[in-house]
Amino acid sequence: MATSSTSLKAALGAVLSEPFTCNLRYILTPPKPCDPLFSPPPGLEPEKTRLAHHFLAVSAAAIQNLGKGNLVFKSEHADVTVFGIEVLVYTTKHSTIIFVSKADSTGFMPQNPEAISVKPIVTTFLQWLASEERCRKPGKTVVLSLFARAQSQYLFPGSAENGRKHILDDRQLIKWWAKVLDPIVSAPPNGNDGANETPGNQGYLTVPGFERTELRQFYPNHSSRAGAKQGWQAGHPLRELAEVRGVSSSAPPRCLLPRFPDDPKARYMAELDDEVGLSEDPTTTSPVKQRKGMWGSVRDLDRFWEAMEFRQECSSGRMVGFLWVVIPAEDAATNGSMNGESQDSSQGAVSSDQATPRDTTPTPSAHGSPKKKRRPLTGPIIPRRPRLKGGSSSLSATSAGLNGMVDSAQGNGGLMLTRDGYDQAMQTLLHLDFANLDVAARSTSKWVSEVSSICGLASDFAIEVTGTAGPVNSTQNANGSDQVNDLGGIVRKKRKVADGTASKDHAAAGTSLETADVPAVNLLGADMVRKKPKRLR
Image (cartoon, rainbow, N blue to C red; front, side, top):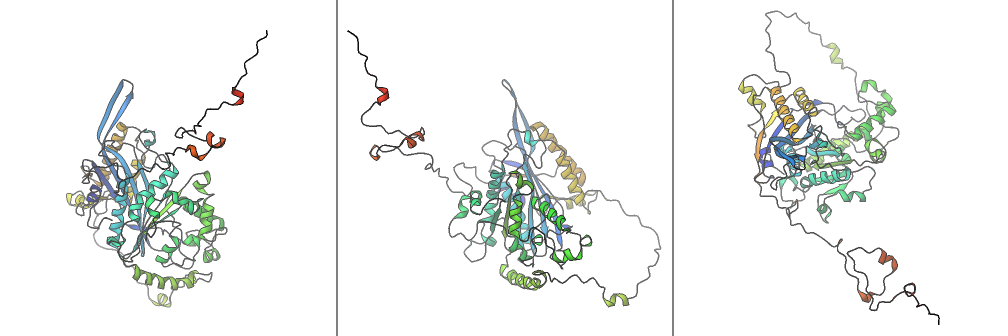
C-alpha cells in the first residue's frame, strides 16, 4: 500500500504508463458530525460518528469518430471527463469505514496503446485513502465497504448512450470489484514482508441467494491458493466489527448492520423497523420496544441475509454483491485486549433483555446550583464581514484564503469545500450530459467553472499527472507474472482407432474439432444396396 508520505499525484503516476497524461480534480469536505452508522444497542448511547465526502474526477484527451460511410470526421478534445468515483469516510472512536458510494465512467477513455483502464486508478485511490486514514489513526481498524449493483450510469447522465462505454452486468461487476480490491487484500500486513504472524488484510463477499461454494467464481484466481494467511472468504465481518466497536456479537442484528445511503440492505432494515414500530429517534419509540431492540421476523444475521434474497433489488432476479476489506489496526494485540475488556463489560448490558436503561433523572447538584441572571447586552454593535456561501468557512477574497482552499502543501491537490458547496458541485454534475464527445467536453468545462466559482477560484484546479510506469504489456496479468493460455479445455484429442467402435451418441455429440473413426474397410448398409432388376426374355 502507498505510504502516508506519498501524494495522490505520485501514487497515481506510479501506476499509469509513461506516455499517458491525465488531469485530476479532487474535491472533499472536512469531517463533520453525522447520524450514527450503526444503531445503538438497547440502553446505550449512539456512537459518535463523523463523515467526510471525497470525489475524484479523471479527465484526459479524447478522440471520437462521428458519421457513417464516407462522411466520417474526427472530434477531438483536450480535456474530457473519463471517470469519477465518490467515497464516504465514516470515522468513529474505534474504526474508520471507507464506503464507495458511486463509481462511473463515460466511455471516452483513450484507446491508444499507452492508455490504461480505470481499474488501477480505483485501486490506487482507495489504497491511498486507507493509508491516509491509517497514518492519522494507527490504532484504528480501517474497513473498505461497497455493494456492487449494475446500472447503465451512476454519475454521468447520458453516458449510457455512448457506444464505447462498456456496461457490465451484475456478475461481471462483482468480479470487477473483487479484482479492484484484491491488491489491497493481498498487500503485506502493516507494510512488512509478511514474515511475522501479524494478521493480514481480509476480504469478504456476500451475494444474497448464493451458497458459500458458489461464491468462488467471483474470487480472483490466486486468492484460493493453499496456505494463504489472507485472501477472500464468503460471509461478512459484521460480528468482528462489532467486537472492534465494543459491542457484543450477540446484540440485536439491527445494531450490527451499517446503514449506508442508497443501500438496499438499509432500505430493508427500515422496513423491518416499521413492522415493529422501531425508530432511530428514541422519542418516537415505545420504551418496551426500545428496551428489546429486536425485529419480529429476523432474529439473527444469518436470517437477515436469507431474507435479503427476496427483498429489494435481489428479488427481481438481480445479483447484488456486498464486499468488505478489513485492514486491522497496527497495534492489533493491544486493541484486542482492550476490545475484549469493553466487550465483556458490554455483554452484561447487551446480551439479554435486562439491559440497563438510560438514567435520565437529574443529579441533586443540578438543583442546588443557583442560576446566573442574564444581563442585557450593552455597548456598540460591531458588524461581521459576510462570507461566501458554499465555500470554506475560512475562505476570503484574498489569495491567502484561496491557497488555504487548495491543499497543495500536502501534495494531494484536494479542494476543501463545505457540505453545501460539495452538494452543489455534485448536483451540477448530475444535471449535465455526457452522451457524445462534444457534449461531454462542454459538460466538463461547465462543471469545472461551477466548482471554481463556488470556491472563488479564477482558474482551473486540475492537477496534471503523467505516468511514470513502463508501457503496458498485454502478455502480463495484473500480478506482473506472464499469462499462460491454457487450451486444455478447448482442444480435443483424436480418438484412436484401436479403442473400438464408438457409440452412436458419442458420434452425434462430436464437434468439428473431433475426427470421426475411420474403419479399415468401407461397408455399405443393407439400405444402400439395390438389386439389379431382371430383364424379361
